[in-house]
Figure 1 (cartoon, one colour):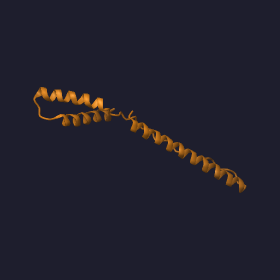
Figure 2 (spheres, helix red, strand yellow):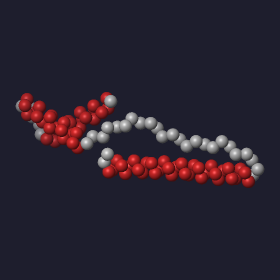
Figure 3 (tube, one colour):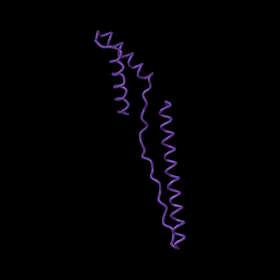
Figure 4 (cartoon, one colour):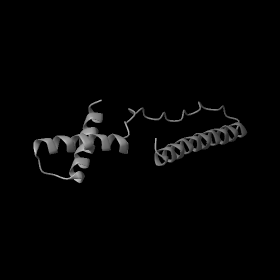
Length: 102
């Protein structure tokens, strides 16, 4: 997991906790105002459940570099035309396609 992904995940968790705190605070405020008015409290709203997602496989530079190496080897052995950049792009495309199948 990269630092950027970790930071994004931490921010998302913090945001979810902040939303939960806000909901709890609003429920307490509503219950107090109902009690002051002499009415009974209503059922507490449940916070929304986060959507379940498949864990996406993160492409690492090492994975792409290894695949690009094998693509370059095959291209050179068959006498094909191309360069390192094209091999890298093709490696990323192949790995993303394989990850989408899983």
